[in-house]
Amino acid sequence: MISVVIPLYNKKNQIGSTIKSVLNQTFCDFEIIVVDDGSTDGSAEEILSISDPRIRLVRQDNAGVAAARNRGIHESSGVFVAFIDADDLWNADYLATLMMLTRTYSDCDVFATSYQFRDIEGKVTYPKFYDIPFCGEHGILKNYFKVSCISDPPLWTSAVMVRKSAMESIGGFPKGIKSGEDLLTWARLASRYKIAYSLKPLATYCQGYSNPRPPEAKDYVGEQLELLYQHMPATLGLKHYIAFWYKMRLCRCLAHRMWGKSLVALVKSLSYNVLQCKIYLSIIKYTLIGLK
Image (cartoon, rainbow, N blue to C red):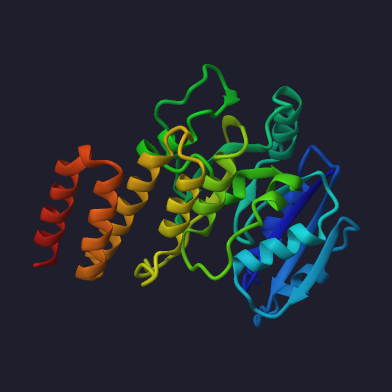
């Protein structure tokens, strides 16, 4: 059985469509655990209005999306845990495709598919992936960190299913992080377990209006990635992935005029991949021009 975990916080107008996309799956052996993380807009009542014995509502005080997902994992009964956010959608054959992956690649613990973006006007676009290590529609993503550095993220939360024991082994999602907790989770999993992947875009990221948040003052994700590398230095591509993380943080810090944090991120990134020095100089040059 698959346990579908949905963290819910103030998504009254979207959660119904998300639940419907789960209930419409061609693979039906699943439970849905909705963790209401202290919603104030009547989101929980929307769940209670849906009559299906596979749905279970769990309530908690607001503690953040990571804590909500972890609560769902704790409450789950399935061998596998699949995640979907309360405003995203699945194609009808999403879970069936994941179960095909579990049978085909039985030595894997992480299973995922590609996805699509849908903006508020209904326009659909697709992520771009490079250096996929297999031919055909599906295979093992053995170079996750390399693909992540040169592509759109291959793993996205609403298009990932993980063996419950694997999620428990890494302690679930890290709590208290406003941005990047999912990337850190996938890095921890990818450094320990094999990833089976389907290139079929079977999940939809429904984009809305959002203002990019400034980076957190304390870079917990970077610190934890470095710690992961200290313990597992032989992990393929992890060193360059850390450089990639600090390059992303550099860009965000520059955009928010956090000059000191920008310098720290630059030095950190170069220390993990000095060969990209010209790229960083270009980033700084064009960012400063844009800020004038």
